[in-house]
Image 1 (cartoon, rainbow, N blue to C red):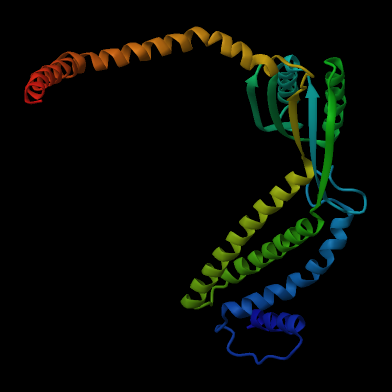
Image 2 (image 1 turned 180 degrees about the vertical axis):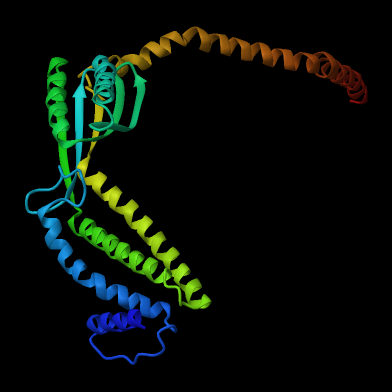
Length: 302
């Protein structure tokens, strides 16, 4: 009964009112939750202060000294000659691959060639902030070397401080609760229904811990790696070949159009010829013969 007296004492400290103590072997999952909450409630209150001193994970490049955790997203619009887009695009992909997954990760890439003078490409990256500074400096040099320019550059920031601290605090609380449940499960004088209830509660808490761990890992990744989206667009010439290309295409199609017209006439003649031989021409001769027979008869009557 010594164990149950401790349980009752912890419950009193957590919820602030007196409960009647029944037989020690007749406990339930509600009492277990209250007991665990009494133990880890102080640690939840202290968690934000502790985490302001250090990041809740190994990577902390996205956090400033005040304990604010920010996720950055950069968007660049590059304009350059169409002949330089493919080589510049491939160079940036290779730089990211050479940097390794810890510094740069390619999350998407695409190229579209609408014509020789209209080529577009897109590159999406996740990059470590310090490495990204070096990459952006090199990117500006590459653009300058091909007589291109940065048409637009946008930066957006998402504050993940609250979400990250809350998730970390919940994870610590659930971990403490799991430890308490495991200790209760080791009690030898518990009844079978209570043991089954403990196992169900322990399984539920374990699932919540795994979910919180995954969420915390995703939040840390968003803080430690910035998202970069680069759009490559070919520069439009004042008078390009595409502006006069319809005339050239029409001249190229001249012979084909004439050939199609002649082919249509031949097809029409071929279609009408049997009708003329077997129906139209005999019909005309028949009408002429009838008309000549009726004409003398009408003259004689007159």
